Length: 114
Length: 114
Image 1 (spheres, rainbow over the protein chains, first blue to last red):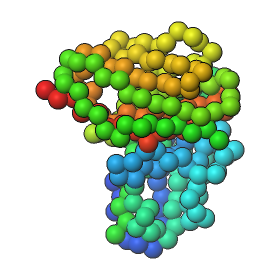
Image 2 (cartoon, one colour; image 1 turned 90 degrees about the vertical axis):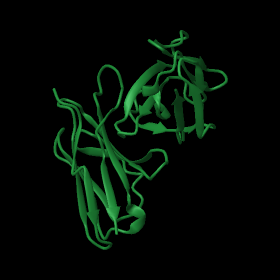
Image 3 (cartoon, rainbow over the protein chains, first blue to last red; image 1 turned 135 degrees about the vertical axis):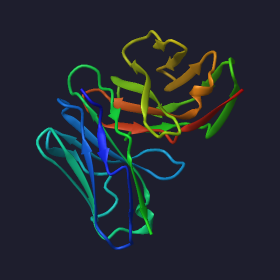
Image 4 (tube, rainbow over the protein chains, first blue to last red; image 1 turned 30 degrees about the vertical axis):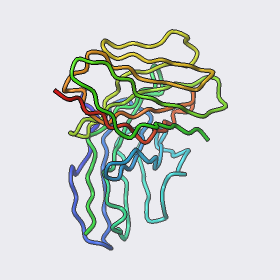
């Protein structure tokens, strides 16, 4: 079916506001990942879901960041009290836990905190 | 922890020529996967090629091939007959077998010149 989708594609918010970023993985993909990519830089691992549990939350940069996943479906990444350093592209990816371990990425959400 | 190092922040190549991007990694694991991902200016991450560590034969995908040196922990990407559409950021990535936690290098920006 369709690939990984993310919404919104772009988000501009004022410092101090909360934002929610959404990811719809490929149907049937058990694993879901969130990465952060600052301008011109590499991918910073944030969190990984296996089903709706998160065995590795080590990448979340602060307690302002949280993520949840409903079953093996949609995930939301929430950033509370946004700061200017949160400005980045947030990439979501999913993969199947059977067969090849390839990650399939969404187009990302560009977050700008003013 | 696994680390992935890409020592070439930027490279350029003339159209139709060959270019090699370098990647080294550090792990104590014996069974793992290595990947090259491409991120064009549109920012959608696309899998280029995958190598399974237990396979001695280097992976190839059309104009893309790798030189996997397990003992040296080196995983370079060779692009033959470079095309303008190959212009992108290229990320090397590592995943431990059975772990599904993919970690990326900082990336190499490749420009193909006409």
